[in-house]
Amino acid sequence: MQEMNNEKKPLIVAFCCNWCSYAGADLAGSSRLSYPADVKIIRVPCSCRVNPMFILKAFQRGADGVIICGCHPGDCHYTTGNYYARRRMSLLFSMLDYLGIERERTRVEWVSAAEGAKFSAVMNDFAGKIAELGENKRLEDLRCKD
Amino acid sequence: MQRLKTAMIEKATALLTSGEVSKVLGWKKGELGFDVEPAVFTSVDSLVDFTYDAFCGANLSKYLVEESKKEGKILVFLKPCDSYSFNQLIKEHRIKKENVYTVGIECQGKVDPYKLKENGIEFVTDASETVDTVTVNGKEFKKEEIILGKCLTCTKKLLSYDDVISFNEKREPSLDRFEMVKKLEAMTADERYAFWKDQLSNCIRCNACRNVCPACTCTKCVFDNDNSGIASKANSDSFEEKMFHIIRAFHVAGRCTDCGECSRVCPQHIPLHLLNRKFISDIDRLYGEYQAGEDTESKGPLTNYTTGDVDPSDVFGGK
Ligand code: SF4
Ligand code: SF4
Image (cartoon, rainbow over all chains, first blue to last red; front, side, top):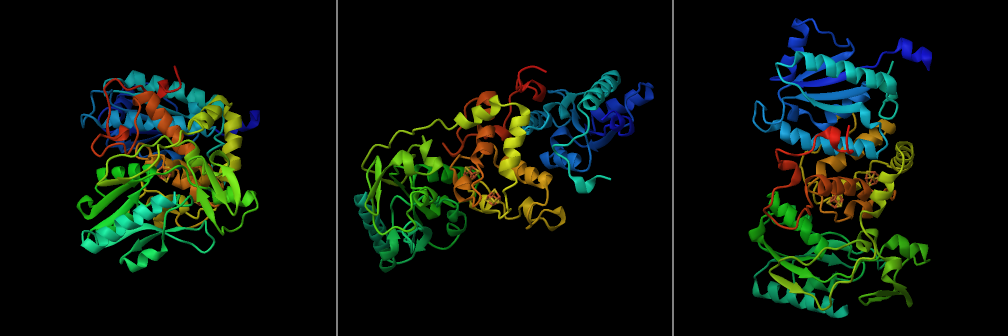
């Protein structure tokens, strides 16, 4: 186990909305705030573009944690997208938990374009939690692993 | 209950003869007695095969998606659970309502053929029914012993119809539909994982659960996408099993009326209703009680929001 943790770093997929969170990630970068290199950012137009299938596919392809970042509720570029995303993700995460899949592997955070520091803090925290959980075994697809 | 069937046939005959409807959607007798199937009757003569008995568990509403688009008006008989599906389909603009004549019918719970088999009954020679009992081949059963799981918990009422044929008050359900969901929620994550692994690994991906579901009416389904790698084939590993079931249940979340058809038709006896009911109970808890299909106008919980909804991180009660 020890060995595995050393050689395999957790892979994290972060779906970031174009208008707030992706800009927040940019700001974190230009402010030279660090966040783990294993966070792979996928830019989406809005948090509500994230289909439950995207999240499952990310796990299938080897993600150990999936985080969805969007504008703060009330600040959505499309006015209401994140409100819908919030309901969907609440239900989906609860369902994953119901199936016995670790609830800490999925998360939603609201990060604005001005919150570079928050972005970096959130990613560091999430990556830490995922490292503690170890490799995703309960939603893995062995055929997709090397 | 014979009286019910006679009244239904009279109704169908009258409407067909007057020309008000040109066809009737109902149930047709099977060969083994319990294997009744949904059927469209187009003439008074063809009604000889019409039946309504303790085996008519099948939900007719989904057939109207196709049938209501055809020429002429159709008469449909709806049990309480069928009518919630019907309303939901009207809400989703899947049924042409002006082409349908609805008659609500009494239902006191339908027999589960598998439970009959467990009692050594392979085919039915004669059957009769009262509100609380069913007698099959001379053997009397209490309803609780023999009816479908979905009927044991059913609290559905007769809604609004063009007509209603009902002679008795509906019997009270004997179980709480969320009991098993609560039991699962009280287990540890490891136990739940083991439970679902055990159940879902039985799935042969026959798609019966999807095909029967009145909430699944997309003409192009994600599970038929040739590029998805999961179309028309058995689940090849535990990931695919879970994915199919999570996505199937999620796609009907907020629209599932809990009609119970998915669990009824699953040849592998997978308790699909436990997935749907998890979503239903979460919706009730987080966004206020909601019964899909109770009306034809209200907004569904997933096409709606309030600014104060809980955050996904707080769903489990605190971070
Ligand atoms: S009906 Fe049962 S076996 Fe068939 S796809 Fe659905 S869950 Fe799987
Ligand atoms: S998911 Fe099952 S219970 Fe829900 S509407 Fe579809 S068939 Fe009925």
